Image (cartoon, rainbow, N blue to C red; front, top):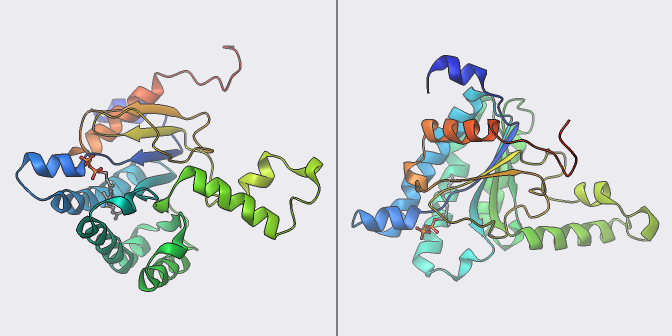
Length: 240
Ligand code: FPP
């Protein structure tokens, strides 16, 4: 896409991505599925940088779902190790690029050392003012809503049913304080939400591409943003 066209695009403030197809991409090349995940992790880092340069304010990626534990243990371990490595090595890069990291999902199920690294990275990037980068780990949309209700109950916020509203629940979600995604991208052909950000995607535009995640790049991101520019968002209202 040429520079003039890029400059003319309205950039979504928040993009969420379901990064699908790592396994299939690797298998097609006669490589183990875990190779696809390592390649996918590199793409995550590049797309974060590209999204930031294009002007995206928040990027949320689905790295590990509550259902992914049922994969072969070797694959689960490889994914956890990739995430471990990311938490440990990305701080310098985040500092340089002013990235603020937040992990969403039920962290209590993760190994203690991974929980500690996540806490360190979240704390050490909390004051950064650039792009907000949310990584969903052991994340399920329904699970997040259940945990939000539990959190609200623990805070005594559910005692008066008349005061329970959307903003109360919003503030108890893992994504509290982050605007809802404007655009959801899913790679590798599947066209479903798969329990990702169920609450937050209520009015998001959906973009599906056949490209697998390891093949996704800046040009593909720009194509998704261009498609977003051709949508008309009405939020249930009428065209003016
Ligand atoms: C889906 O592809 C992808 C995943 C379940 C894992 C995504 C994780 C990464 C890209 C690494 C995350 C790293 C960081 C730094 C956040 P799949 O394995 O289901 O592929 P398939 O549908 O072809 O089997």
